[in-house]
Image (cartoon, rainbow, N blue to C red; front, side, top):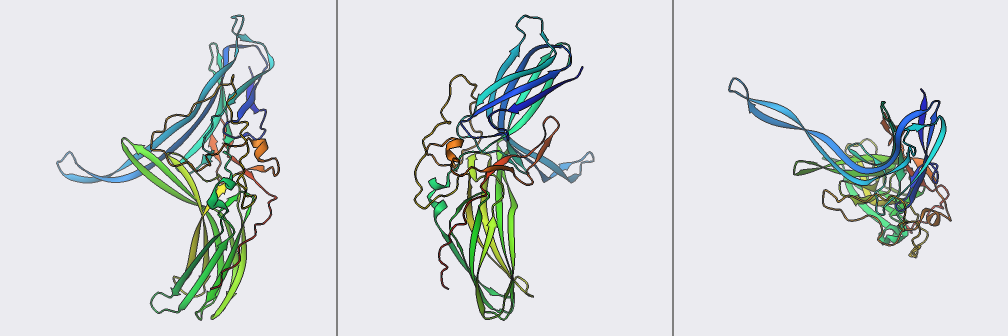
Length: 407
């Protein structure tokens, strides 16, 4: 007997949802013969998990009474359940435990709670949301399938005062390890701190070379810093992961005793927004700007900026209007999964405490596309390959940078 079981999302073809939104979907069952079954159940799950192993050197007494050293691999792991609800979409009404041959469509609805962290796939952990379907069959193995979906909070940069303020950083270095060659200075200006995927970060740099050496290159990198927390018994440990998400380079020819002003544009790719509202997993970003000097060891000059990645772009310096909440209100009649109590001390939330707009309201003027983050694909035997999708704004104007400070 051949039959197929598929999950489809009705109100979001790409499977992208916002906290407070209803996950509206259907199960499509195709069977060439009558199926002996009791019921068809649909479950929604969401959790954050962290895990890694560490090697520890230990001592012990062997069978000969001698001390010996050995290495023990210690495992750390933590989990927080955010979603856990189920609904039975079909039962045999006449007691025959038979489902006729052909195509059958069973619809389901779940409402997501407010305050969920975003979907994320990292090296030492993940935040993952999924729909599970199980057909309980008589005298046979149950038929199961699973499909992941993305959860993206509405993170409005206009509600974060520091996100709309310009930033400037000046750094100087007396070049040379033993014999000093002179001073090189760099002032870097950014128009603001908050950006969204698809937007370009405009970097203005003022470089002054007071050495006799040549400055040959400037590099800008957007780095993602993931922090994981996991437990082993009552002991908690942390892991950090640095990942480059974007880079741009420009060749330079700044000779000795010269200066130059230049501009770089670094596009933010599809990536998870900044968040700290998960007790065991958080993501932050920073921008690193470096210049390289020719033929000199220790010849890199670097400055860094903290960056906020949101899901709603800055629309102006006075954009403080709060859009009334709509889809985040709880709708009676749909299963709602409750958030589990955190197993570790809560970190401060990274999202505004103001009411969150629904997806159509938030993106009505400039709707984004939804793209997979590069390098964040997870593979599983029961749901194939999956990569979270994040909103990308491809038609935003380039921000106007503040005037360059004179050195």
